[in-house]
Image (cartoon, rainbow, N blue to C red; front, top):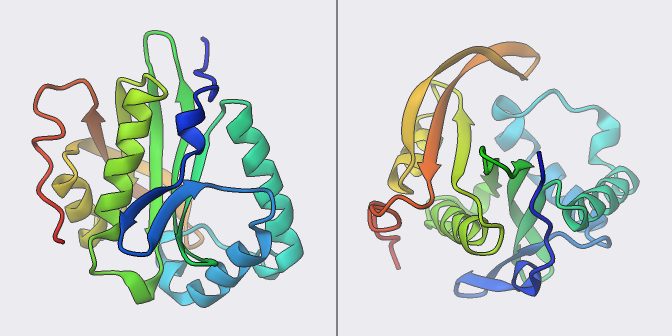
Length: 202
């Protein structure tokens, strides 16, 4: 099955999603900023992330990760985006498992720095990422997974036009335990999207 390639220069654009907040593709030199973001949000993200080794939070480890993600983006395997406030990385939005052919789909993941939650940034980032998926990658569908008790994430996805489609038992190993996840999908060529998404507060 073919995978869409990120040849479109629009994929590499920097998009302002809020005053002084930019969504852009990850760069090979983002490692130290990524490490700082993960260290700052370690407790905030721990309940929703896989277990992380101490090395994960080091600048050198995140520098390797940034280079790998940037290469994967150029190969069309995924689209890793970062939310930036100046030189700081304050979140991520990622399309992974990008597939072409009859499936034409990708998985969406995202997080926002604890300091910046409650400002509509997650929804703004999801909206822009979905636009890229449809208009630049030509995808038909996005899928996202949330823990059943992650009410905030499920609400963000619903407000972004996603519809819950089922429960996947023991879907991902999160915080050291195989946990069920609620799966949601967004059909990008649905005539109701993006109108179905609720307005993002200004």
